[in-house]
Image 1 (cartoon, rainbow, N blue to C red):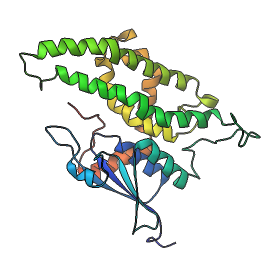
Image 2: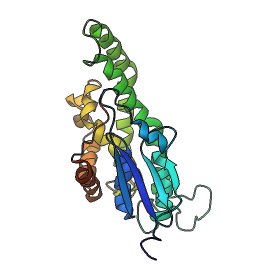
Image 3: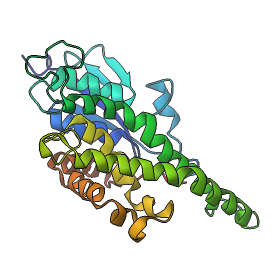
Image 4: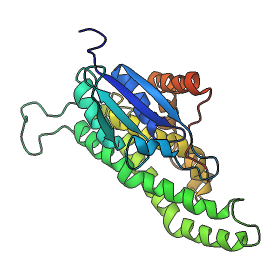
Amino acid sequence: MTSEQKPKVKLYWLEQSRAQNILWLLEELKVDYEVEVFHRNKQTLLAPPELAKIHPLGKSPVIDIFPTGSGESITLAESGYMTQYLCEHFGQDTNLIPKKWKDGQEGKLGGETEGYSRCQYLLHYVEGSLLPVLTLSLVIGALKSDNVPFFVRPITSVVANKIFSMMVFPNAKKHLALIDQMLETSPNGGKYLCGEHLSAADILLSFALIAAEPRFDTLGSWPGGSARAAHPRVFEYIDRLKKEPGYERSAQKIREIDGKFEATISKM
């Protein structure tokens, strides 16, 4: 197969977004890809209008897949869907999706391995459960920022602190406790969420945890004085993810293209 016939992926990468997860995934899959970088509006922090020309929602990540390397493409959005699609078509010789069936249970209801079931759950959990809490923390936290006029900031800060204590912090504690428990009970004593090998679920979860790492302590009062003290296993896991060769390659890729890389959620 010539280079023109090999599949190619184009990633539309937005700074301070989950597009970094997809870039890491492409590195692990060793698929031929290119990256187009977009920057947020410095005032609104929204994605630029150019992204709406690629997908109607104007968000990132989005990918174009060129099955023969050029010509017509398949446009995909939503991180979980992209992850599943890419792994199904390019990840057959990897451990990114754990073995599906228990031996002798192929095709049977409930015959899936624990690692596979965890991975499928986590691919939906990240976007559907965890990220809404982190996004809410950003929006509510903005009520205490310098963007609020100083003469009303004391009032908005009281409102923000109330929402943090009633909603954001209790949910954040539940999520870190869940991740902690999944790491403690990882199949075969593995150091990743789905077992002994890095999975697509770890990659999809990585940006949320790495970007939110310095923010957890601002959400409330944790046992032991910090989120790391309360859940050392989770923060050791975050540290491992940042040292993964594929993660480091993906970060370096952006530095080469854009001159810098910052693993953070957009600041308000």
